[in-house]
Length: 233
Image 1 (cartoon, rainbow, N blue to C red):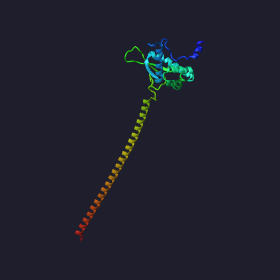
Image 2: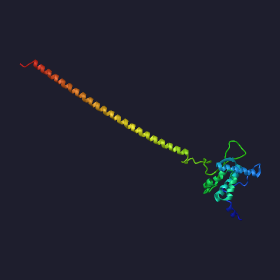
Image 3: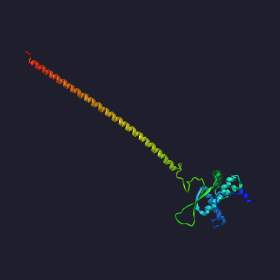
Image 4: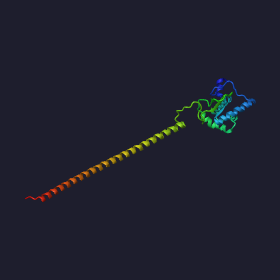
């Protein structure tokens, strides 16, 4: 069988494997297998786990192979189902592999898992690593685009801004109405003062006319009295 024919039987992994496997165990190969099975089971169950680099690096390959074969052969392929049942220690995770993860990654063009190195505050001999399934429900690691308008805090800030502008507009309308009402009241008061002053002037003018008429009458009466006292000879 040629290499090209063999590659059709076994799919190529979508990430580069290290040449040397660093995972060791005191119980020998069987203990090493058990540790990998536990790690793969935890990865499929929680979809993001933190562990040392050696364990994560080697377990990642088995997780990738499980998902790749499940996508290629499906749940009715006897050997694929047998392999999934061996590496996944919980039965419900076998169903998750075919019912959840296969539809999620069926059209994916990249690896199904991802690894991140974790910085630690204290020096240690083992490099801490985060191993995760892509497109999980957790917030993304690494560089995050802060200008994503659909992030929760951006949505809240946008709605708060809309509420502030609406409240500001309503306050401006209320202030305008109060100003117009105050102006109208001032105009009414001014008009009333003008009318009152006009009436007062008219009243004063009438009083002056009455006083002049009275004075004229008194003068006429006095003149008549003088004429009666000194009749013509």
